[in-house]
Image (cartoon, rainbow, N blue to C red):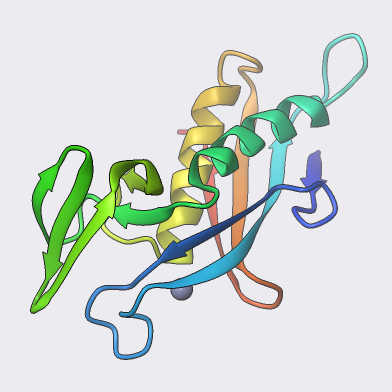
Length: 160
Ligand SMILES: [Zn+2]
């Protein structure tokens, strides 16, 4: 059985800035009001016959959203970003563009990109890991990271 959580209605949202380095249109810093849809599949169990408690899932996803909210999302593993220093400021360049952003305004992510595709995988992996001690028989975690209403990317993490 699956439980499904709608990110807009359940308030799993964050507003962040990012850029897709070297992309013709998305290469400049711009922002999205993201929302995150979640589907968790597993066997029903426990005292209440839940797949997993909605509240638990929402809490975990909201924590990740909070880390990203009102930050510039920077993909640490990007091949295009040349980091100069990460201290009180994050200094980097992308080709001939140079950036210096206060550290507190940045969220560095261990990703090659901050596309919706990469972020959906990031959320799915983190939620899957966080749910593991909570419930051992989760079959899959699907996350859709939506860049506003009407466009998003979905990734499904399946138990190996
Ligand atoms: Zn974008």
